[in-house]
Length: 151
Image (cartoon, rainbow, N blue to C red; front, side, top):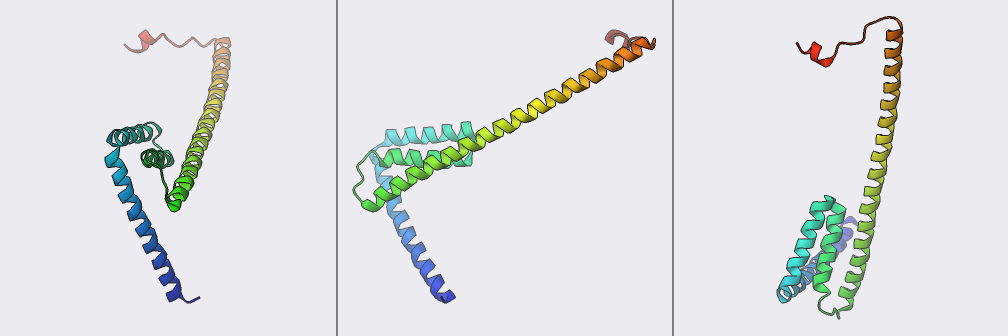
């Protein structure tokens, strides 16, 4: 396959994708104009979801679900739009699941780090207590109280 043919083929597919995207955006604009309260609620849910999760994957999934709520308010009769809608819903579910899995993994890693730090702290406390015991047994005076050290 010639590189020129490949570039021509990719260019044609990109133009077709842009045409579909432009049609979809115009349909979305019409749906937003037809349902302003639903659009405002979807925008609010998207903003709230992004602010709470601070995750790009969750924001992308939430934005698709918000758009799907607006577009889904009217029946979709075009088979291409139905397919895009179905695939988009599946992608949104996958992205949401991935974001949740990543959050779960991060929480588990932090819990493991916390347990290790607590274990290390307990070991240090045990060593400190042994040192204090040995020093007291050797006759070293106890450290002065905090009030005597600040003068």
